[in-house]
Length: 112
Length: 114
Image (cartoon, rainbow over all chains, first blue to last red; front, side, top):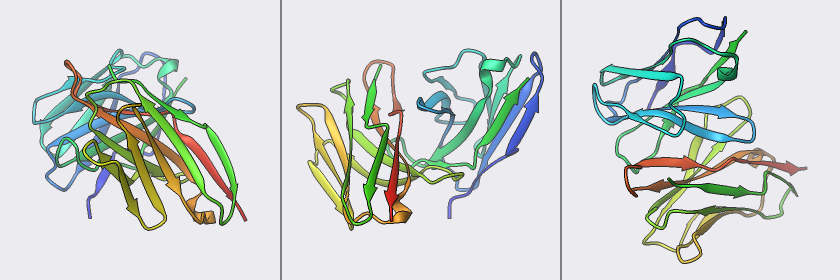
């Protein structure tokens, strides 16, 4: 079974804080993704990575950065959290480009 | 980039009836179309997908159809059951230009009434 885990289920941060969200997959998948889920907007891609140390911007990268130092780990960084970044963040991984994406349980982030 | 529109945003059906969710996409280069189901409080999971060289695909009570000319694809659920209640997301994968990513629709909340 593919297992994708995220470091926190719930996070509360203050405006201006630096926030780290971590994602780990245990199936040696090449591809990893960070999405943001908001009601009525579906899943929007923030960043993705096709290989270690490689990253590409998705549809809404502003205010975010990512790091992939190891194949199994993909981190999302909010350099200076703002209230409009309050959301559910979902990590996913896949073996191939057009193959099933396996999602983590999500991190619900509240920025006050 | 790719734009995926999904309708309806909410859908209620009686148990045993059929449900249909429709999506349109903008990029004619899109060639892979998965559907994900997200139950309340859980993570999205793939339920079925279709590639552009196929017009229809079935898996038990679930089917997906693809019309490349019209650039739309649909999810059909027959004999609905209460456990089908969830949010369903369509998605399209595009290779056009610099975009190589899956773009999701906005989701459909399906409620199956007992």
